[in-house]
Image (cartoon, rainbow, N blue to C red):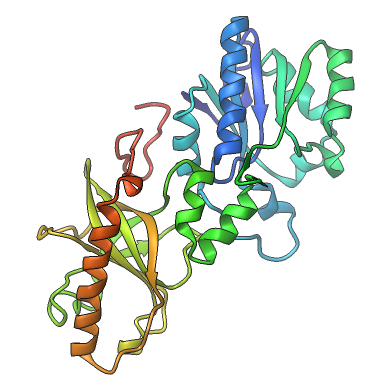
Length: 329
């Protein structure tokens, strides 16, 4: 997948495209089906398959107050989009100026003049342009006027409910990470660099931990989780604590991962933590001995959870260092 951030880079280069467009936060099962449909339609018609998305998310520009925490930051979103086969991703900088464009102006500037679009595929609830006026009916009328077709994908449902970024966000924030997996098609993950912590895990407790410098926006609710840890091309079992370590009187949120059967030095390394299942709430213990006993039980339970066939992790792309371009490896 080629990633382009300025339409001028490819104006006149793409002769015809099948395009899907959206914010794609989480790149969940609904988004995946949309992208894969655009790819299959493009292949059948001899067109270029294109995903158009935005950075920053429009809610960060247009929203009143703080936006919700996003499931995927831009780097991970691009990486996930690339897994589903599009040839080109147009990553547009969203601005107030862009928000003022009517649907016809946006389509003309970016999708027709820039990509030679012949087919547009949108999600069931997608709107574009000034005042969100570009709904399916409006876009269909524009297509008849300018010579492109428009199709709309029906909502994707799992367990009787529509797959949505909002639903996934609610599940993750409530600690129900196991239930988020079928909606995402993967375990929810965060990533970060291993930094020096308080040096208590190994020295005091006998369970060394990798302390993450947090870069993501969305985290499961505080507690202890069975996890997979992805690092430098390998995946290992682990148990993570998310919270403030009340036994030690901490106040800042932290993610500390104990990697089972690992004794190496990870300081400075970039790792990913895939959350499989919540084990328990975060508690304040009476002292070190009680905490050590509880951690030993957590590790044992985490090992048994991760040994189950349904907890198996499937990685579809090699580990990428932060800042790498998934479309230009």
